[in-house]
Amino acid sequence: MFTDSAKWRKPVSDRLTISLPGHTVCEFSYSLIKLKNYKADEFESRIRDNPLAAAYLPLTYYPKKERPLIKARAIRGIANLPPGRERATLFSLIRESIRLDKEEEKQYQEIVRGDPLWKEVKMLQSVEEVGYERGWEECREECREECREETVKNLLKSGWLTYEQIAQIMKTDVGMVSKLAQAQESG
Image 1 (cartoon, rainbow, N blue to C red):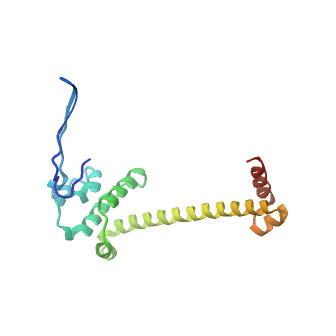
Image 2 (tube, one colour):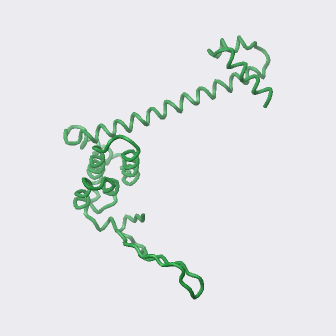
Image 3 (tube, rainbow, N blue to C red):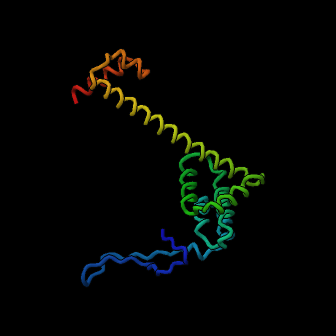
């Protein structure tokens, strides 16, 4: 997929040729679809038949001031898809293809906030935010666990405390301390 916000400043060939000196090995022709040649309204009408059109909607032609509305329309276009990989992929494509600045983001939030027409967009956005938060929580928990193990290893190296004392200080069980001690001795 080629994207060029200025209606393809650089010409792109619609033909691929593989050849050796003096001999064509393979020649392939394909149709070029220049999304910037499509008006957003025209492309939006295709979403019902092809949800991928929602992901490409931000890459079509529309006035710059409509960017927040286009993002909302694109997300609304995939909101009725069943939850899963397909919807998540399309949502990521939309998010990546139309990154809003702070002012545009504020306008986008105003669009989806009050109007019931945009309820699905708001819900999908909330689901994404919850997923993002869960990811951070899992990351923080993973970091805590790594930090705890590292601290236990350092306390073991010091030799000042017994396994039981380390387990009590670190609020963990003696088995975990013993396991880390064995790993440290063998590694």
